[in-house]
Length: 192
Image 1 (spheres, rainbow, N blue to C red):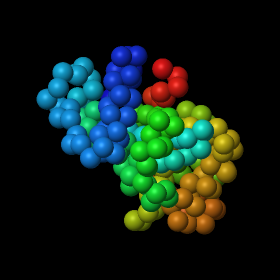
Image 2 (image 1 turned 180 degrees about the horizontal axis):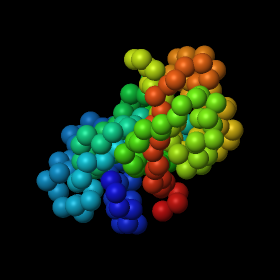
Image 3 (image 1 turned 120 degrees about the horizontal axis):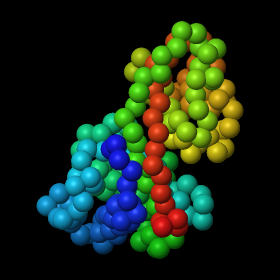
């Protein structure tokens, strides 16, 4: 995804996410999104993260990091996974659907961040702008740019991301981790 989404496209993606969850809760099959008439940009490959909250509290969050399918399909699949497959939560219930607010983050392609010494890393990150992916051997974890709202220090951000990856918080200082950054276009039902 290289072009900003229009207001209409954002609303369509939010509608696709809510419709997919609603259909699943009612035991209905999913719509054939590719065959339907949607703007061409939404049919291009895209990566997304769908976050569900109830009264501002996380209720599910699942995403993809790399574009591997049309954005409309990716959003639908991530919405279903956030509602029913996030291992941190029980599956969403029909009673919760009306309370859920959906947030969609559409990701740019990740770019490798080159650095020589781990002490340089905090200064290379742009708080509030960059989403970060850390990799070490078989482990991988990411935080969206929105996470900077609660983890404002780059050192704390990196430490918590290491912990999310299943490693000690200071691993970013001790190892030369593979680091990638990306940006997002984020929108919620409440904003639109």
